[in-house]
Image 1 (tube, rainbow, N blue to C red):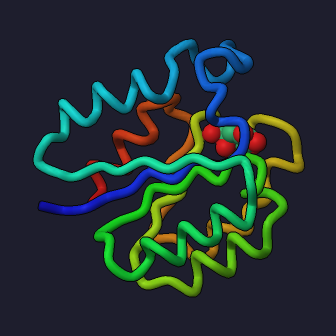
Image 2: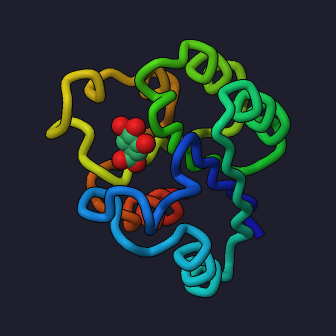
Amino acid sequence: MKKLIIINGPNLNLLGKREPAIYGSLSFTEFLDTIKDKYNNVEIDYFQSNVEGTLIDKLHEVGFDYDGIILNAAAYTHTSVGIGDAVKAIETPVVEVHISNTFNREEFRHQSFVSPHVKGVILGFGLQSYELAIQSF
Ligand code: DQA
């Protein structure tokens, strides 16, 4: 069985409550239950942190034995050289996802320190972005 992990960055623990017009009204744990049922032929682990270094530690921990990482680094996408370097340093392929289409939002969201080092990027499909990423593995 393929082993995947979804890693979510800062503020994504508030999904369902946070700016529902942009991010939807479903909590991530509710969504996770449905996708675990739907894709029961793959193991899907989940990790969320609001702390940059903790996200880097997790990438190091899983980045040499999982089959795939689905990473939404949230705001750190646009600021973190460290998370970009961690993605570059590990062996497991990473798919970058975003719930919103970051290119039709503020200019500062157009830059990603993660994108140059990933297998692919999926964005703008709401929570379905995560499903498309699962299907890509
Ligand atoms: C996000 C987009 C980021 O710009 C933002 O900081 C987030 C969420 C998304 O999934 O659409 O927190 O990564």
